[in-house]
Amino acid sequence: MRLLIMGPQGVGKGTQAALLAEHYGIPAISTGDIFRANIKGKTELGLKVIAYTDKGELVPDELTNSIVKDRLAQDDAKNGWILDGYPRNAAQVEALDVMLEELGTPLDAVVALDADHDVLMQRIAKRAEEQGRTDDNPEAIAKRLATYAKETAPLLDTYKSRGQLVEIDGVGEIDAIQANIVAALDAR
Image 1: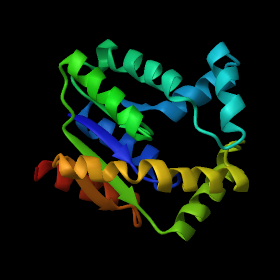
Image 2: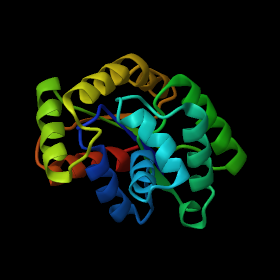
Image 3: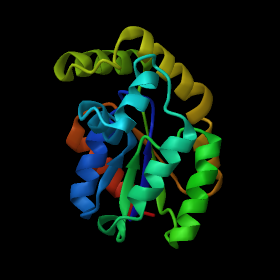
Image 4: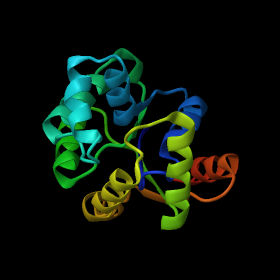
């Protein structure tokens, strides 16, 4: 199973990706987690990334694409994966299409989670408090949500036209949302 999980920040992509990874026995690959681990480790990549994320900006495509390509080629991803937080724009969709063709691994589905703006803001504020994430300040949140609406949300139409989109309500109990995703994927 090769899946993308998409939706605005705070909708629960990371939570659902982890549950689906366990359910299907495949790795959940989060570009944000990769970036945050490098920031915490003060690696060269981490220092490059923090210059963007602390201002609420997205990491440039070239850097993100390189990290994703490397990660998808690793042994544990040979039988499938879930990508969380990628692609974020049309150029990244094209880059992912090329990567998957080179790897001979087609995309199975795109799970799109959605929730009301107020719900997203509450969840992100709670996450910032619990996890101490410097990139979850009000200004950065507003900028990321606006960028999602402008650049990422339109990608759902691309995947819908390809017959790969599975739309799921991201509000409710975590286990119920996961059950809805699995049922929708199994029905494909």
